[in-house]
Length: 390
Image (cartoon, one colour):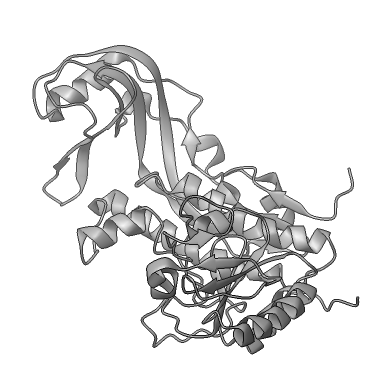
């Protein structure tokens, strides 16, 4: 098989990563864990997680119980430290990455019941064991997310504790960040260094996630955060940004408003001709191309000027660009080649902190790439798209 580009999403033991010769620095938790899906007969209301632990005299955790609710009546996935009799034998290959499920002995119901007897918040009996396993946890990250035309993503690039359920979302965002860049490269319209921004943007995120999940595994979710709201937003990955990305154009770090490299916020209550209901900004971002938003006062002169900006931007983006003019309601009295979106109550302008004439470029992965005067929008496209020879 011959391919132009290869993305290795082949897990913690990635063949692609090893073939590239990437280092995978980090380590493994000394503890092994066991999982089991069981039913219990306690009185705790459905839908609540349970966490209990015992701390030894030296400050270490020597007993642990984490219960995550599953679909079904009183059914949970329970995680506990492994008893000595179930410890996996790793003496034959100590250099291997110790991460994931073991192929050795699996926990039985009495192993889980023993932990419940010690740590359950109330006496309870476990039953209906449907699945169980022993697993190890490592925390590692590659020294580079790719070389040349070959890249790694997901567990092939970073592994960490499952605390806070960060792994799948982080891997999906790796893919989302890389996919639109590879797509432009395959079409032959990307700049020569666009694909290098994948490592520049995503590896700092991977390092943060690995560090956060290790800390949360040892100290509890939210440790070190300034507030519960911040902890929840970080766990939801709503605080991720690419503030140091070389693609950012027009970034002003001193401004309180959303800046290039940050997640583009939504705005609601907008109107468009032919649509009988209010629309939201995210409805306009559902495609696979960049989106250019041009704010205007709606005057004929302003619309005419923005049409020229839109035409030049579309050529720069090799026609892979959606453009909209954002205007106050009821102000446009002329036909426009650019689709008109009425910003009722100025929700979009307020969300982005823009007044008067301005331009915003939102990337295919939902992050702001440019903000500034429309005449300067070509500065961003020059970083992404090769020169259009048409």
